[in-house]
Length: 254
Length: 236
Image 1 (cartoon, one colour):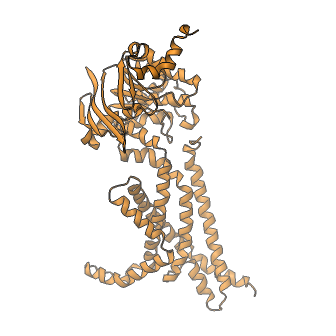
Image 2: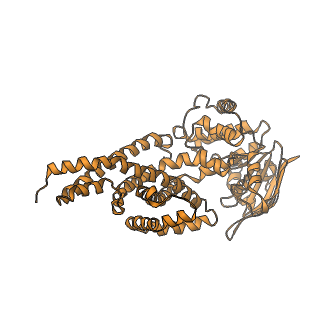
Image 3: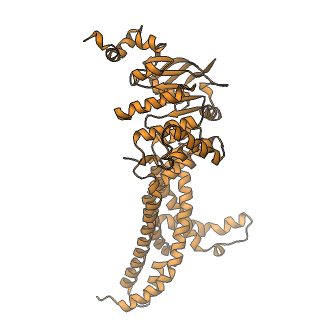
């Protein structure tokens, strides 16, 4: 049973048509990885799913909520957002709050969870991501990797239907990338529905249940990682993956 | 020409008694101005239909009007029209019951709300887009995000600008002598008019205003250190 169903989603910035009618289905517990070149529209698609960008038209269903994107109301947008959580490329931690408060914020303010309960939740998710001893640290006192851990913990604590990851490792140094990818693997592999936009092909190959390749605002190819990454059928996909393929099978070329 | 120190001291002792009034007028107009200024800034920042454009022109017009004129015009409008308007509203109060001081407060509040609106608008823009998006992404509404995330970050940013405004408005109180409100400058000149020793009077008034400015600057400096701390180093 699919938890997300998007049909004919379109989005334009002024004259530029960024998404040209996207259909997307995500099953419960499925991990979907969206790949594609910069400017292909993959991040915009992700942001349309929690209305950080407002799509122009199309229909969208998310776990019992459904709407016509052209006529979506503010109330509906908030309702949709309460069922999603996002992990940002630049972490997006609330700079005026401690690590613990960052996590409590969405629970206490948006979901009306009692403060005490939210504090407990925050403590336990921070421990889960390995920051149990940094509850009172403020974002500027944390390294990039640690900030992203808090970002992931914040998304987890909200217990959403789906977690959206927007290039979660693009701002990190190479050493930290694997650390964060391991953490993401841990948190999503226990049955969480997740949609990731990433340039980490190895990771996509390992973790994804489904890989979607977007180019120029359209889904060019989708399927299992083995299909899309291992044996792409479309020329555009092959071109995009050329470098990755080289890395994957060096023995053929040596 | 000589500077009569003894006389200057005499003027000083008279003028200093008007410090509480000056500060009272400045403080109340700043408080009113900050509230309205924030309101205008938000309407413009979120481009609220109608209001956004209206206040853009509103601010442009009044930013370009010299303070002296705004105060004089406000005063004259109130003097000419207060009694008849009050009467037509069925109120039994007259201009004399209200007092000139409140006209001064009103005019300065108006001026400071324009200045504050610009300071706050800049501060709102200084908060990165990601902070707004993060707040929305955890399910907060625009108002919740504003109260819990945006304003706590924006207001500290506006402290240095607000300090400028506070000092500007405090000095602006001296213009109110034009409409006969007896503040520091008026009191000094009054004392001098008997002997025509105006140089002493102006210098004394200037020194008192200078002292007030230093105190205000120190207070804001303290606020900046206190409230700026939580978000410091964010740009690194």
